[in-house]
Amino acid sequence: MSTDSELIERSLQGDKSAFAELVERYREKSYWIAYNMLHNYEDARDISQEAFIRIYRSLDKFNPKRQFYTWLYQIVVNLCIDHLRKWGKRKSVSLEENLSEDPHFSSSPYHTLEEYELCEEVHQILKKIPPKYRSVLILRDLEGLSCQETAEIIGCTYATARWRLHQARQMFRELWEKKHTQSSSNSS
Image 1 (tube, rainbow, N blue to C red):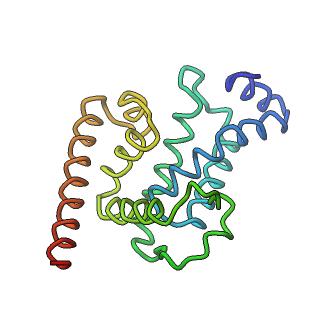
Image 2: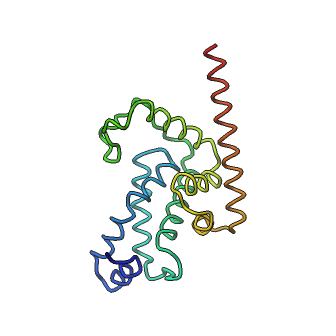
Image 3: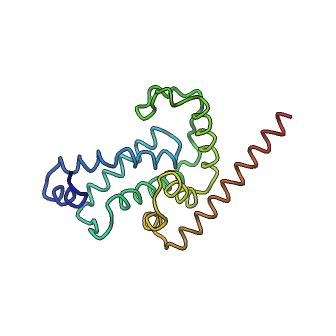
């Protein structure tokens, strides 16, 4: 298996299959980062594709001292933030949406209604967190990146990334507790 650096080098020499391999390697991850930021399948797909287009056009500017995926994820996060600024809360996904049409949704028995409802609830809360905090929370807690990688992706210091993560977790916790306090008082 070729390394990212080898694939980039081959791409720069005109090997389109090398770039296709990079896309295949990171397509799903970039999609899920965008989806977790936007909570909309079509927008996430568009953002992911746009990120790869931008990468392809500026591949010669890639800094080989960086990890390819941090560069890609940085572009995805920035495109998501730009999209949110431009479109705000224009679109939303409901429980009634036909998920069977989406290629990323598995109809396996492991995806129960309870799991889906929990994911929907988490995404509804994530949408209420400002993008600069949401992006850190998604990259660190949902995607499992280190704080150092997260800082590099969002373009801030390690300390700032840690602070934003702390703030984001606190916001999430407060929103979660508020929602569940309201739910239990409504059912009483």
